[in-house]
Image (cartoon, rainbow, N blue to C red; front, side):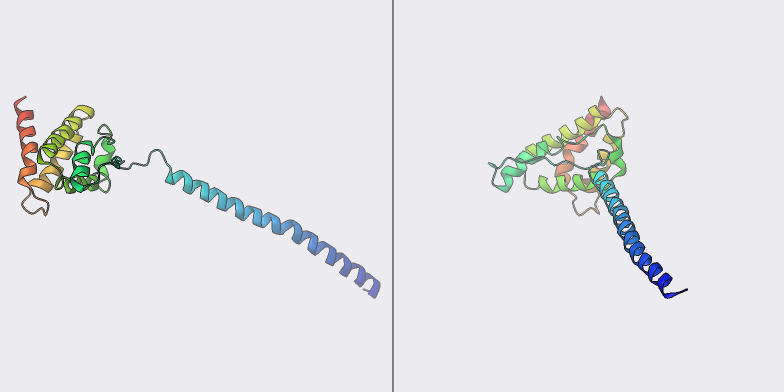
Length: 173
């Protein structure tokens, strides 16, 4: 190879390499960027998936300032947004059982009569809205495990009374 041929091929190489790099690098970045966009789209869909179950808490009016006022409002409305006809919640204790435990915690701050009414109303909804008949026994078991079991740290015979009465009336009917 003579010097002139070498200069021409060297010049062509210096023109081709930058051109190739200018074409390939944007393609690589575009490919990487599209993967990030796709994965972020998947994340978005997963986070806002309409099939994702959750316990939707109600909003307490701001006018209710004291803990007892807030509890008196919350206890009878606690289950307003819960779908008792969706038996899939039975298999999701991190949602349903946690909501139930939170409900029991609120009871301690509310008027006893409102608590009694709320328990009865909640069991009524479990019976009425679930056509499979699975929710009512599920919630009865939760009440028994948390309020009646002697080993439960949340045991409370007083709050189990409306549950026992409901069971008794259900058995008689």
